[in-house]
Amino acid sequence: MQVPSQPSQPVVIVTQPGYGPGTQNSNWQTGLCDCFSDCGVCLCGIFCFNCLACQVASDMNECCLCGTSVAMRTMYRTRYGIPGSICNDFMVTTCCPLCSLCQIKRDINRRRTMRTF
Image (tube, rainbow, N blue to C red; front, side, top):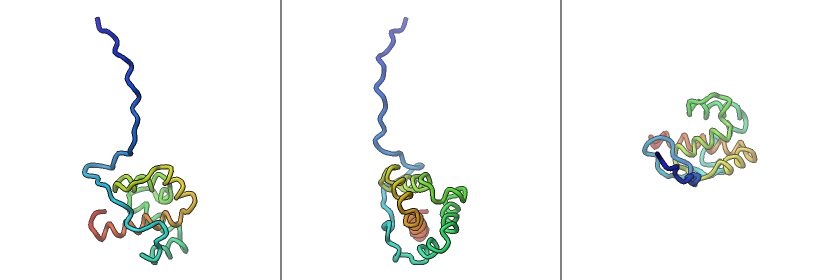
């Protein structure tokens, strides 16, 4: 006859897991409002926001409708080990979707140049 064990303590997750093997910590390649580091991306975002959103989604092999979502920013951030939180991602995408989208696209472009995308 087995004796029932003590109820286990709930598991508390304090950090988000990385995406895939070998994920390392890094930072955004450019700041949120660093438009002058790649004016082409920002001009595309200003004059054709939906086109830029589709480019970002396509770069990440996702549906075109997902380019500006909190989920997309969170997925990108965790994939590259960029510090942050879902709450922060929500606030950035809600308060400044253009800056958020441009930051992701600039980061993708820089990581492609470094051959880490």
